[in-house]
Image (tube, rainbow, N blue to C red; front, side, top):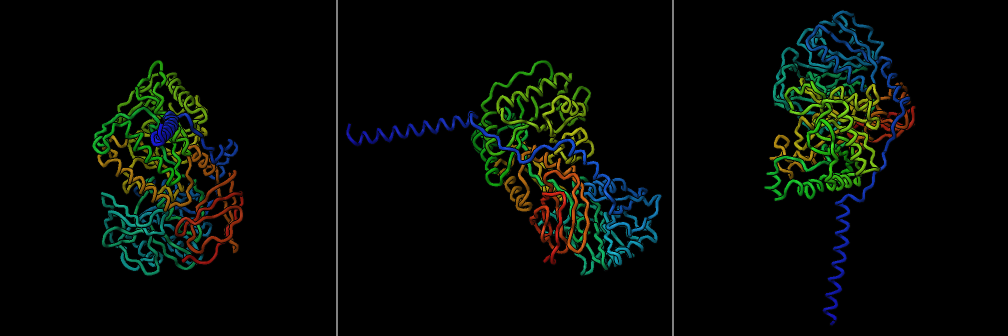
Length: 615
């Protein structure tokens, strides 16, 4: 054999060996043979720690809420304000002016007016203004007031120089960059005009945080210092659950430094993942990529989704569907096509994610007689025993594939869960510690709606707030509000979104992928120190948040916080409207944006000095 032939032979052999080795690696990767489970960042709290939640409900009242139950929508307004104050751990007393007189303002630090017709206050409106100007009181006017003599009396105190006699229609608003976390350059426009904003012009001393998005630039949120006190005015009535963060931001303007607990968690859910190949119309995938659905997921969609893990530190919580067969009676056969589950599941785990439970099939845990209200056409379950068998099969199947992964998160199929189904999960499956459904609610919906809380039975409710890859301005509005109320991002997406025109299939995956990337850019720019957590860790963060109560004192040295229900760490939002944080004892503090700071408490007693003036 001459040297040239021998050289070619060696090169060929080496090439074949390399290709063979690479094939083995790729095959092992595809078959899901190798995976590792990342350790959790937090531990479950014992029941003794969770029981301290009751103490925060008896907080000393520092805020006076004035309402008038005889006025239109007052129950809605009051309920909304109460929810925000409770989440902020602000103790409050409520006085109903429909049957009670106004108490002494001097017993409180802040006051919230939750009604529109101010004349009901009578002489007490004078007392309130004196309390603000002379004693440093702080008042939030929650909703746009009526154009009444009482309002015109208030005008010089709240910074109104002209107007107060007529209303304007508003179709949307801009937010100032420093008003809310994530509000930089944000515009929120709605379809139906709201005609409740009073037409006014402010003096130069008032600071505007939100204004109408038309040529009038009508002030919708502003603050005005008067004497030693402050008024904050909401010249618009927003009381939906979506807008809690907006109300929270308005209330946080009252004090020179506002402090309230937050969760600090960012979680991304992959519903129906892993699962069998999704059903649906793959025409847009075929047109763009010339691939079938299975190949598209393996070679395009999933690598793109994993890239977000590398770029942003995202940790997915995938929730398994074993089969799409709608079996509700008898046996529930084991899924035999395992390669897809092993491949996607292993890569998810290797990127720091976790695998939770969605369903043996995609049927909600609802029994005969459950009213789906025509929204979906699902089979219902006949017997409790069948549900138990099906859920146990899903757990066994997941554990067989990934024995080191311990699923504790359950996501209801289509976010639908009956009371009986939820009770069954608690009674029969103690390993299920977290339920992730949806946060937002509209009248008539059948989805299981949640708060960020530990339920009375000990299950952690960690709802998802936004979804999909269309991500319109309403989704961003909901995300901004959740960041400001809880410092939470909670998003879910289905792999088959790219097959459904209602969820953006016609736009194509390239555009949907860009939308997701833009959202993550916005999220991690707006909240640079938010924690990327799998859902089970986010639930543990909720445990710490939900048990916490805050007792605050102020003196010349700064702010002193005593945290009841503290376990090993707690997070609190600090907004400095005057000055900025200095030295911190019992924790650490990081700047978020504008006047917002994130405090991590490592002890139950935290002391913060406040220094200088903000720019």
